[in-house]
Amino acid sequence: MQIGMVGLGRMGANMVRRMARKGAQVAAFDLNPAARDALAREQNVTLHAELPALVAALPAPRVVWVMLPSGDVTEQALQTLAKLLAKGDVLVDGGNANYKDSQRRAAWLNERGLGFVDAGVSGGVWGLENGYALMFGGEKEVASKVEPFVRLLAPAPDSGWIHCGPPGSGHYVKMIHNGIEYGMMQAYAEGLSMMKAKTEFDLDLAAVTEMWRHGSVVRSWLLDLTADFLKKGQTLETISPVVADSGEGRWTAIEAIELGVPAPVMSLALMARFASQGQDDYGSKLLAMMRAGFGGHAVQPTKPK
Image: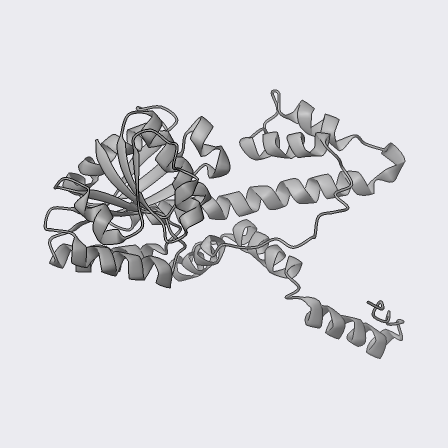
């Protein structure tokens, strides 16, 4: 039970901790010395400042799990590792990659005699304590080499994970998972905003969401988290109304268009995130000017900074 982990951010570091605490020997790498130092006291973890040293520390056949941001960073890491690894070794991409990239990567790694597994990982900062939901793709024989570590990371050895199918399928399922997540979050946010706006009832949103957690058909972990932070304060005055998007929602919307499958809730939730990022500011100004043009409606001046 020896594995390499490349990338010791919030997810990667806790995944190292969870596997190591369950008995796996983990060789870990990150360019950032502070990220390595944070794991210095963990048992069963050896830290490396260079990728060649990490690879050399692992017995063949090796399994190296990459937990890096999607895009060029992951691409470069995989290309570097491909040159260091030997035939029969397996690379796992656990980041939020586009499934089409995963299919491409599986093909070129296979040409080099290397196995590839694309793993969608859900659980966030709570994964260390509660376990991670894992959906992974890859050829069956290759995926079987990763399964022992998946069982350590999952909430339980026999649940909370699934081998979805061929290369790309894991990241595809994770993409749809995140699209659904966008829609659920947006629905909760809109409903709670309506209740807050109904000032005549003076609704206690913390009490309402806490009640919903027990027996309601809308109960979920997202609701649990929402109820928890509302107990600490309901005005949210110090929170900026900007919601970032990681890219998964965009890919989901594009996939729906390519398939010709209607996905209005997920697509509109994505558009709402764009709006929160100020992407509708100019359009809103144009709308105000149109109303002024045809109806003489007053235009509000910008507020001084």
